[in-house]
Length: 117
Image (cartoon, rainbow, N blue to C red; front, side, top):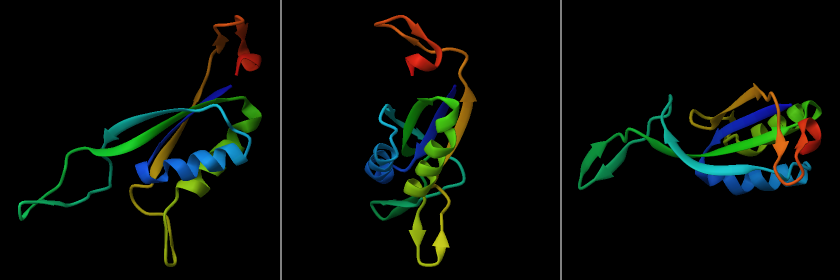
C-alpha cells in the first residue's frame, strides 16, 4: 500500500480530479496549502513589485494498493502538467510524493490493509 501526495496548482484541481475519476481513482482527500519552491511569481500592489513568500497550491492525498500506483501518478502528471506552445511542463506544476503505508484501518468495519482502502 502507498500514500500518494501531490501538490498541484489550484487551477488544475478540477482537471486532475476528473482525470482521476476517469481512471477509476475515486477516493481522494484535498486540502489547500501554501509554500514555495522554484516557482517565483511577481505581483503588483499599488505600483510596487513584490514576490510573495508563499504560493497557494492544492494538496491531494490518495491511498492506493500497489497495483494502482503507476495509474494514479501517470494520471496526475498528465492532468496537472502545463502545456504552452512546444513546452511540456513549467516550473510550479507541482510534485508527487510516494510513501509506504504501514497499515490502513477502516473505522466503520475495523478492516485492515488493502481491503480497507
